[in-house]
Image (cartoon, rainbow, N blue to C red):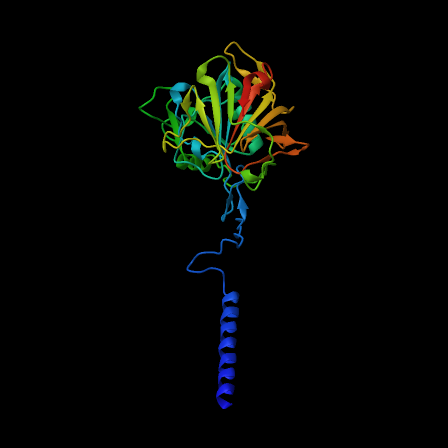
Length: 348
């Protein structure tokens, strides 16, 4: 009898120990051997600061003043230096259908920038609206007057050729003037210009490309400035990177310094009233009245409008700033005649 009692007690003890081990295993953290249980949700960490012109987030606040540089877009000036670092690139005509670029730097300032080209009055208007420090080499008569009267903080190659802007030996003038990030900062100091940002643009951003609502599919985009293939640009959407690549005249747009292919989260087109004002074909652009626009992002196309809000050209949707995908953007200003429908085409 005592033998049976001993066996029953032993069985109860063993059973209790087994249950204690199971409960302990259930209460353990699901991370085993450095791996996480596949059924547990991933923790999403949002960095505290967003770059004002790209929406990309960082652990550090973006405090530097934006810099706007006129970049030569003649075929002899390609590939350009520093484009891969620009938060936004604006493209518009300088004379006739020959375009120039305005590269906006705020989240980073590259080591080498250029070729730098001359100013136009509407380039300066855009710089003033962005509260940017402006860099150019040369000017039209109207732009020269604006710069002389101090409309915008700036440096210009006409005064700083050979010092803050330097000529390269591998290209011919006027396609060979370059500056550096260090020289831009030196120029700010020489001109007693403010170096910190004070004006935040009215731009809105999604968290990521995955948040963009499904709309009209558009994986290939064409834009033509006139009939020259040199100013025929094409954008192709890469579903893996969720970015647009760019070609001009059939050649990939890359950064001359890093050989990095330009990757864009957003491609925008704003229809703007243009007027030819002299025999050289110089233009006057209406940057205040707003108009029709297209927004391409995440492989889809949206019909939008644009407005000037506190000096900044902003894409608008249903009366509010249209949300952009975090990343770099390229904004085309195109003529109302022939207009968006004729200058821009896209395919799914």
